[in-house]
Image 1 (tube, rainbow, N blue to C red):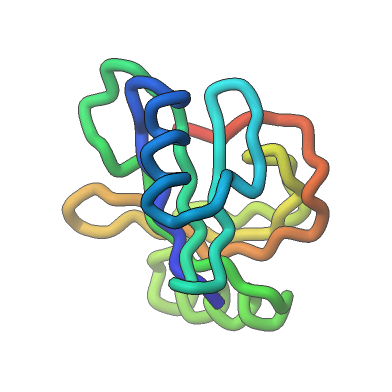
Image 2 (image 1 turned 45 degrees about the vertical axis):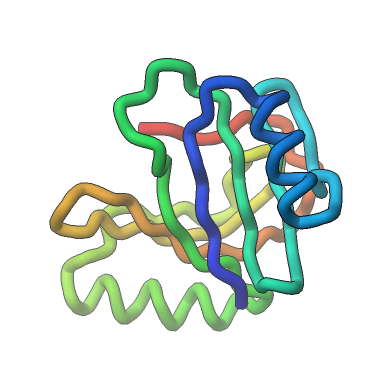
Amino acid sequence: MRFQLALNVEDIEAAKSFYSKVFGVPPSKERPGYANFALSEPPLKLVLIENPGAGERINHLGVETFDDADVEKVKARLQKAELARRVEDDVDCCYARQSKVWAHEPDGIDWEWYRVTDENGKSPPCND
């Protein structure tokens, strides 16, 4: 597993340049208005979403898992606690195919637990 931090950025090019220098590697995936750094050290998926004028810098937080069973376990726990806001099985989002479950914490931040099943999705980041 690795922690995910999805940030709204004003200028995707400036953000990609900054984080490439900070982590010493280029983005793992780039699309118009979107980039992500899939790092093993530190274990972080940093997602940059060009969203000029966004009221918040944090778009959402998450946990990327590498096993369907991990997503299912969290889904069951959140559903039992009545915290599962949305379940998405085999959806196209952030230019990848994913299965995920969402929760909305009390102060307004969305959390997702997800597994990427195919890196070649076509749709841009999902915002709601």
